[in-house]
Figure 1: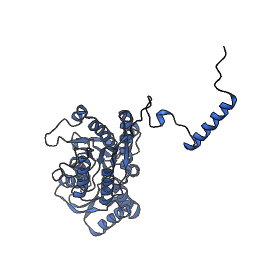
Figure 2 (figure 1 turned 135 degrees about the horizontal axis):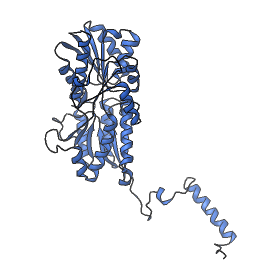
Figure 3 (figure 1 turned 90 degrees about the vertical axis):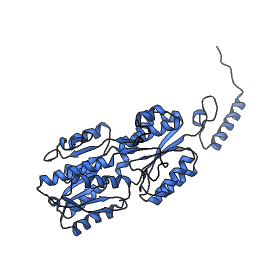
Figure 4 (figure 1 turned 30 degrees about the vertical axis):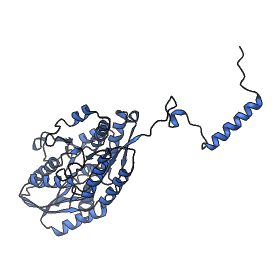
Length: 381
């Protein structure tokens, strides 16, 4: 059976020439309907609306959150719902965060925003969040909240650590480590990026409460997310407080900054208890080398994951998922979902024991924690 010939040789040549011209005019390629902003039936598809996680700054802490964000985007197939998930990294300043939020307000392709608020009481940040909500954009806070008493309408929910509980866990660790050294009194200094951040204040307050009145808080030193200033703060604390017995790192990069000065630079490791929040890859290596006594570790992977899951549910009116994540509903604190906390100690030699801590806080050795990281393909937490 012979096939039917389509056109003459000259017709084929003309058609080929027209195809080549079309190819050049279209940028060197011909897209299929699916890749050309159209659905299979030829209708033009709408561009994806964005779910945005806006960080407070740049830190390995957010690398784990990004992995959680990407995992949720894949698991809940948000592309099929016309959504995409992205992370926007702030420059570590309130002005930078305000500027990004203003950009979001001016854009029409945003379904939801999750923000780690640099300053809980910053009215300008709250104003931009409320402007987003007035446009129909769903707004939540992650990792660090706005002040809910002042700005109740700025966000719908908070997802992140119970920072007061985390601070208390770190305070218990500090107290028991000092007692094991027979250090019954002395000063400590807490180091953090911004002292006005909600998570910073709660962690430092929790530490102060749990470490006890025998140990005096000599200072709370902010560094504005400047790593050089973070190290300089440690130097100044050592120089200015002769009764210093403990150094407390509150944000993730404070741990390496403390170790850089105390262990590597001044070589006075034996004089101090060093307890910190979070587990940057470098801090994990430093604990392995004996330079950190205890870490209270958050779960940024879970924060990123739940931010995407929640904002997708809110954008779709999926109340069942919202109720699952926030079973408290309209009750006080019902708009908060607390992610997990761990106390991590060196594999050997630590006087800290599981029974010293709240039952809601996991207790594990460093090697067990590293196995947990591998399970989720994480470098830090």
